[in-house]
Image (cartoon, rainbow, N blue to C red; front, top):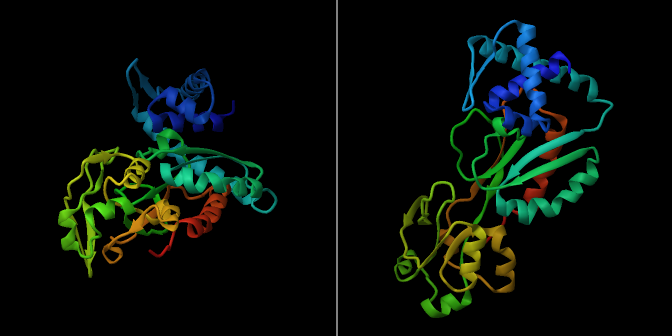
Length: 303
């Protein structure tokens, strides 16, 4: 193991504050991580990490080496990329994380095209709606829907996701079809509770330039888009979902659009990746590929 490899492992350990998680993200044995840190401490003549059975703390010397190592590794990556740009194809493993519904319905079916275009890239795709720590979990990029919390990550807009209000014909036969926002007082919804916060979402509506919300009654509350759509198909209430999620049900008549003029503004879709001066060519290739896929499958749809 050379010095550069040891520094790379050290940086990942500091990012994760865990030997085990660093080993998992780098896909190497934990013993290799331990050996690398011991050798680096011996080489530097200083203790870099204080380790106990419950926690890892970075020493002052470790923090200094961490900053220098980050800079050196970025410089090396830039240098390697400059020589490789003209004569090598994007290669290596790309770790991405995407929202569950988007991953299952859109990206997974489209991935054969990406892998055919880039035979030297392997994809490790996490499909989850939870917040992912890119650095500690060793993820190259994530795609997220909705407003983002402040972070040090680089954010690249991929477009906006149109929404749809809809209900089943059976529900509308039973409760009537709402023609105005005032009619909503006699209706019920399938409520959605965030799996991350537990907060139950209100029914949002737009009137002109104003966005407002109503707390409508619900007999059923779910925490997944699949569950919400299934309940709507069963006639249990109205729902607000991304249009692409229910387009096939709208086309078949199993769901019907309601109050289309009051639908909330589209939700932003954003790709996030760690702050780096040099983006890997495999990540560049993925971004160039995924934008037209999303434009074709989910973005810019009319009600």
